[in-house]
Length: 132
Ligand code: HEC
Image (cartoon, rainbow, N blue to C red):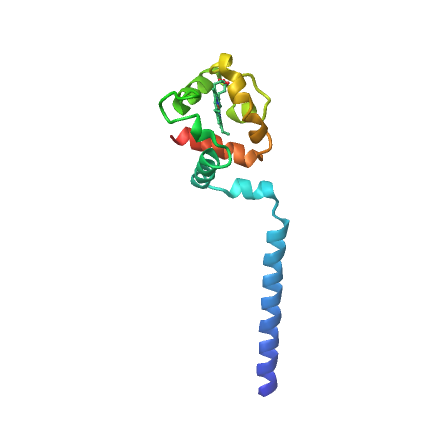
C-alpha cells in the first residue's frame, strides 16, 4: 500500500515535470515577432502613448488637434489617409514628407530616434496617434 502511494507521487511528480518543461519550451521558442502579434490593440495604444510622451519626445511638438511646432496629430492622420501613405514607413526614413515638406528639416532630426525603434514600437506609435 505504501509503495503504491509512493509510485503515485512519483508519477504525479514526473507528470508535473513534463508539463512545466513543456511550458518553458513554448515560452523560449516564441519569437519577439510572435509576441507582437499577441499584443492587443489596447496594449499597442498604451505602448505608443508611452513612446510618444517619453522616449520619442513627439508630444513636445505634436498636440492632438492644435498646431504647435509640428502639425497636429489629427492633421497628420487625415493627410496620411488621404495620400494612402504609411506613417510607419515615414518614421523608418523610407517615405517622403507629405504634410508640411517646407518644415521637414525640423522633423527629420527625430527620425534618428524612430529609425532605431522596432516595427512593434512604430506600429504602436501609429496606433496611439490614431486613437487621439
Ligand atoms: C522638434 C519638434 C518635433 C518633434 C520632437 C517631432 N516632430 Fe514630427 N514633425 C515636426 C514638424 C515641424 C513636422 C512638419 C514637417 C513635415 O511634415 O515633415 C512634423 C511632421 C511629422 C509627421 C508628418 C511627416 C510628413 O509626411 O510630412 C509625422 C508622421 C510626425 N511628425 C511624427 C512624429 C513622431 C511620431 C514623433 C516622435 C517620435 C515626432 N513627430 C516628433 C516636428 C517634430
